[in-house]
Image (cartoon, rainbow, N blue to C red; front, side, top):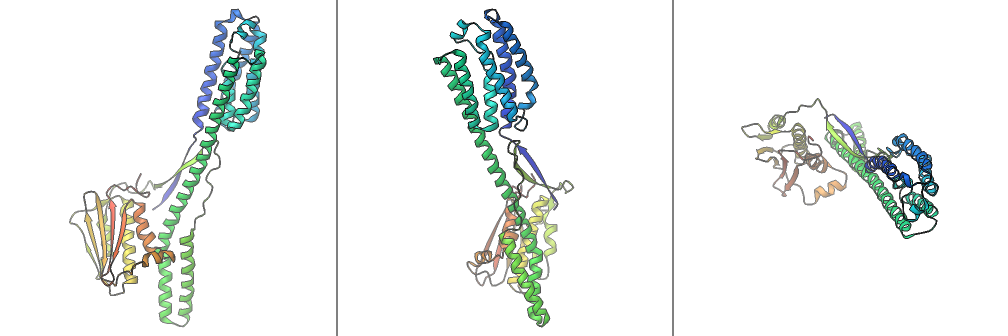
Length: 407
């Protein structure tokens, strides 16, 4: 089945940039409004008017700069903080000394916090501490002394900016960790899919060549020996990992990759598939197929994977139970699930043999059967009694919940 990788990006910090953009505009109008309400109390209102004209133009002209981390450069942050510090230091020139001593606001008022928050979002808590310290020094110089109100305001900005900077750093680390985990998950899924395909085709052919070569002898025996060596090497690759994990994204400032979704090809049939039509070809003189009298509908992906798992189970019967072994396929259509049972009359599987085979890199049951069922949200149970054959029960829910199911 053809699949495509769709990558979706998101950023935990991007909403903070949008909020900062709105904050700067609103606080700019707030600072101007404070001046308009008390302009007659200013000793040099023309100084304040000139500053607010610059602040108005600067705020709207730099909105793209605070839209994301890439545009918010160090040079911009330095210029933005300079605008805020200049406004603080110009307050004694424009405003009356009595208003300043009474705790009146500075010219930029709370707009200054926007500059500090930009440092926090861009560079984390250390940048925020640096910027808020400069703002605190400017406020002390503007007041002429360290009053209780000044200390309160400085500490409030300092603590808030450092907290936000720390949260941003934690969010970025979480994005990197999540992106890495999803890359590993995607690589693991792809490795298991390739391992199943290889087991169902290449490994079985190599094993057959090895057996036939040993039987024929002569030059064919040497060919069989080489095929056996290649089978062992390929099994090692399959069990050890064939797909390297590639870095999908390092740009955590703009947003980490947080989701890679396998999508079925859009040309794939969107209807349900009758499982009986996929299992019927397995019926032979030595394989009995028992089916319900009515169709057994399943999603195409789930039906194909379930049929492939049945084929893998029958391959194991032919390989391990002998050429004369008989097998039975029973399909049960339950209200909430479809159960397919594959049973044979072979010698059975010795206790612990499946775990031993998996440790040796023989992943037929682990990948071709259990792996397929796990991908579509189903389960596979192997029951074997020495001398009484083996029974493999495959159960798939009617609505697939696995990673390979339709989303």
